[in-house]
Image (cartoon, rainbow, N blue to C red; front, side):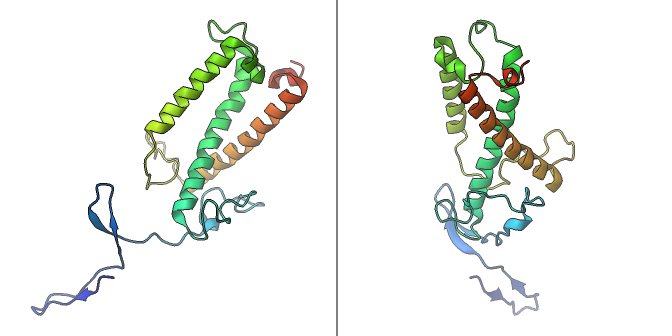
Length: 197
């Protein structure tokens, strides 16, 4: 802890805040102010009637985080946002793929049945490797808000309400993808065929 310093020449008293000595990414010693205690109920995504949504208890168990751990929570929240965004694109994409086929993929069935065809499996492998390379290239510590790109288009929508909406829509999309995949696995029909369209 840094103490108070008082000058004899009549200067005003200066008080430094509590800090911890750490090393930065380049090995230099720095004073780092400890993170404020984390209050889960004040984070984006807390919505009535469920409150703080953590049905599997990841934020309370010792596997991924511990109580009041902002780093573990940030990791879990970033994963939730990322999975929600992928699920939103996937749930819409599975409906889109029923109506639109990329050139060369006209004979490939839609949904998870595409993995049974040679061309569909190759396309999935290319997609899987591309996503893996993007993830590997972005693998670095992030001290900003989880999943935040800020407000690049200056719409003024990076606020608590919009962040909560994105989290809730992502949660709904994750459940939608689970339902679409389970129903397709059971019936062999893609999401649009499930409705008889």
